[in-house]
Length: 242
Ligand SMILES: NC(=O)c1ccc[n+]([C@@H]2O[C@H](COP(=O)([O-])OP(=O)(O)OC[C@H]3O[C@@H](n4cnc5c(N)ncnc54)[C@H](O)[C@@H]3O)[C@@H](O)[C@H]2O)c1
Image 1 (cartoon, rainbow, N blue to C red):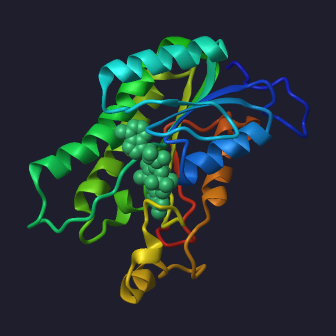
Image 2: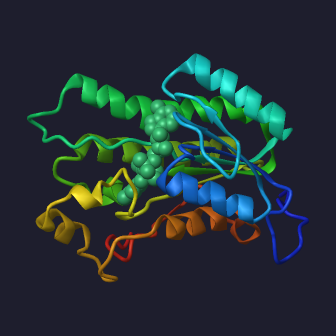
């Protein structure tokens, strides 16, 4: 099995190259920033730009844009050691309110987008590369008014397990399934007290911070995770003990 690292022990990811989707906000921004601080050369893909790393403006629902931007990112990086499929959307709707468009929007970004980026990145992934997919605790426990989102996140688990088999042993593919995390996606500040109480019913009694999810992603990208593939780890405060 090829190893990912020949780096100093204090900065084990130094010299690696990462592509992070949805890198301009929330968990993606925290991940891209933490990777950069760990010595990784990062390029983000997002609808908007970001810093302190280069971020290409790319709508991952557009196959043409994904082809062009992934190729450009791979050219600039010279190869991809870490791919984080993080871009995602959540639009709440009850089953009765669910429209075909709402279903298509979720699956276009959360699932199809990740598939397209990974397919385009594949020729550039190095031996020992890591793919880390963002699932969600909701893939396991569900949530009222978020069934389409939960289904799209369950799909990420199916992709993770299938790609892990298909790409083994050259590439390791794992997922992270965060619990509620303080980002614009959650819209926590705009939630009612009842909704907030629902989100916090976990043993640690709080929602997560983006940096705590990034730490799990960095673990799966790093030298301590060489025997993980097809797995999903859940930084969720104990809300779902899978
Ligand atoms: N925040 C949570 O509570 C939580 C919990 C579980 C899982 N997640 C997952 O973590 C990931 C990151 O979520 P977040 O909370 O940081 O959300 P966020 O809204 O803060 O960030 C999502 C990013 O994805 C980008 N994006 C959206 N559509 C895109 C598109 N078509 N093309 C390119 N980029 C696009 C946005 O511009 C944004 O920068 C998502 O996959 C989400 O489902 C979040």
